[in-house]
Length: 246
Image 1 (cartoon, helix red, strand yellow):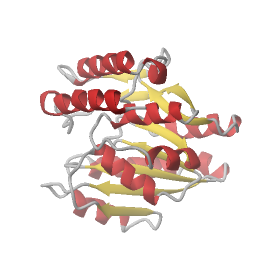
Image 2 (cartoon, helix red, strand yellow; image 1 turned 30 degrees about the vertical axis):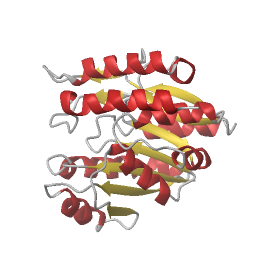
Image 3 (tube, one colour; image 1 turned 120 degrees about the vertical axis):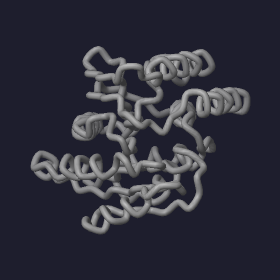
Image 4 (cartoon, helix red, strand yellow; image 1 turned 90 degrees about the horizontal axis):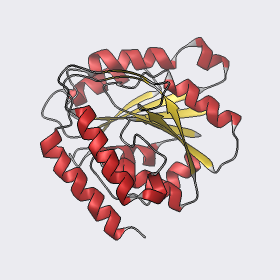
């Protein structure tokens, strides 16, 4: 079994020197090797004003199954993930945030769930920070939790059929069967942070099922998401998706 991990990166020079080694260690555990799981990691680097690209290239050069991809533009997380999906070679594909707010231990659990449920209709496993079994650590004064709740509430109102049962659209951990990922992302158009809602909407429209799982999640400092700057675009994209969706 081969797994592709996609890590979108923008302005991450303060975090990836710590998080990339942690991800590498999580992927090289004997437990995954014993299950015959191999992997590739695609670091999709958007044009950044810092040293993100150089650091990603430096780290990837030390591991044959890692690649740092220079996307050369800054269009948004959705575009970066979509770019990675087009390059993925795995039977399963997963995207995670570069800050590793979601504990990489979720990878093994998500893969096990799809292995135990071979029905191809069950195509997505998504992290859910609001799951009763999730363990969530927040930084004092963080505005992301409130914004995330407001955005998720709006998404559920606008797309009741697609995500009525999904409590957390924005958790940065989602794992897909490769065939489903290809069909979904080839139809996706949103470039910004609201793209997760579009992915769920497209998945439902194509007849795929989504399973949510608990995660260990820690609110990371130095977030690249800005509530005022990015929030307006996210809500605008949400409305555009709602009134153009078929």
